[in-house]
Image 1 (cartoon, rainbow, N blue to C red):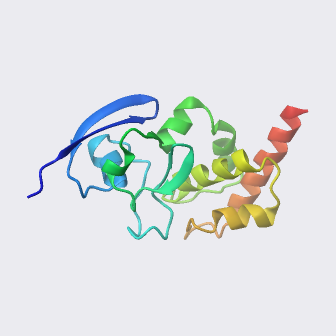
Image 2 (spheres, one colour):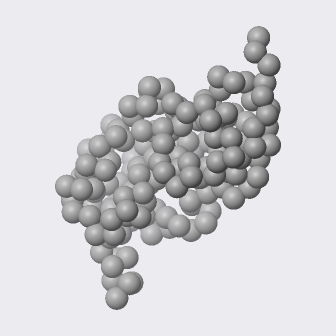
Amino acid sequence: MIAPVPITLIVNQERIEAMVPPRLNLADFLRDHLSLTGTHVGCEHGVCGACTVRVNGDIVRSCLMLAIQAENATVETIEGLSDSGEIADLQMAFHQRNALQCGFCTPAMLMAAQDLLLINSEPSRDQIREHLSGNYCRCTGYHAIVDAIESTVRARLERAE
């Protein structure tokens, strides 16, 4: 057995020090060691997007990243974005537009949507679809998700005026 190694990182604005097996992926670390279960594990190949988190401001597939690769990084999960209020308007729009059904993909969809809106404050429907193309949803068919993001864009633009 390979001995655990120490890591230090910031998760949702909290400094974390832990001993982890070198081969533990970030998704399992977040879920099993920190009880941040909003990060879902779907395909474990980086294809479905259910494990999306932000690391140093960029969205990544946490099933493809080892926990030790997050040494000295800032990691934000759906819980952090939700608790801070950063995505409150997106969450409300998803609810109002019925853009969630089973909820398995929803945390990662919200993470990807917020990522897009930080990059492009006025994306087209095609740009929204393109940015979400790495996140699978088996329930909604994406139309309601795109509608929810589009309505959030309009509301944010109105508030900015």
